Image 1 (cartoon, helix red, strand yellow):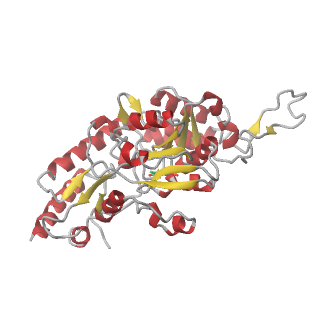
Image 2 (spheres, helix red, strand yellow; image 1 turned 45 degrees about the horizontal axis):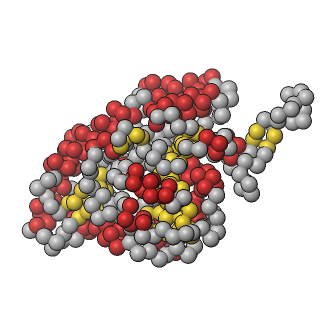
Image 3 (cartoon, protein in one colour; image 1 turned 120 degrees about the vertical axis):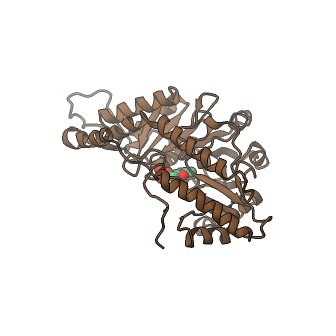
Length: 394
Ligand SMILES: *Cc1c(COP(=O)(O)O)cnc(C)c1O
């Protein structure tokens, strides 16, 4: 189909400064990976989030792989994860052999809540993965973290979509024990399509990351010559766990540092657009938006709504059909409950008791919301949605 407003796979128009940062690395950097640009990026990122240790990695999925290894979860343990999230929130924990337990979402925020998590905790629960989906920090994240602490459970924050969001002056990813950020091509900032950062609270675990991120490489302590006994050692950082190579390149790191400088501006632009969008549709109860109690806690990565067709007797699919075919606006549906996917079913996690997540997914719409969309396309989209909803009322 030929769309007038299409779903975009590109979240950023790079500035000349950003392009030059990459070209400069291409021309001059030696080495091209694991060098000074990575160090600079990690320091800048750490400053941005308030000082916690940060490590650049290939993507957020790999950040979560490292986190899964660091938590020590294993077969016989249980990990609580929302059923309504991107698959990468869960796959790294599935790989450990632990049991994945699906948590429901709150009907107003479309995110997991303390209540939905609490009911699933038992003595085998070792980790809770919270996802600040769509960009919004879970409103009661601090209560979830305190509850988990009281039960000796680790909290992992999947911040792939929420970079830029802050709650009580704290950046997402610094509430729990671990945080994972993504710079995938569609995320709010992107380092050439892929990229990520892992952060964590535990300083002694932080020391293990350079090794587990890069094939276990570690300096020899008592070298005789720089080549004796060998250039570097490879060693085991986590008992019984093989290391990986999840290194971010120097070009990506250099770009990331420049991008961080305009992250807050980008987030504010998104915030203004989201406000305009929602305000333009207040008279349409057919669309129920995420309940936001704190504006700064939302990075507005995506703009979603639950279609409530009861008043008009019309379905979400009738709305999407009209919007796409007549108005050429490519809204989509996303975050198929993970328990419905073939992958999770085949691995034994096809069962969930998540009625709110199911009902949300079955009625949800995700509107194109890339910040590179022109103002006129944005206005056209809002106008089209209004017209389509009125038309549906009949
Ligand atoms: C994008 C995303 C990921 C994975 O990030 P990558 O950097 O693409 O690996 C994980 N979780 C959520 C919620 C995401 O949206």
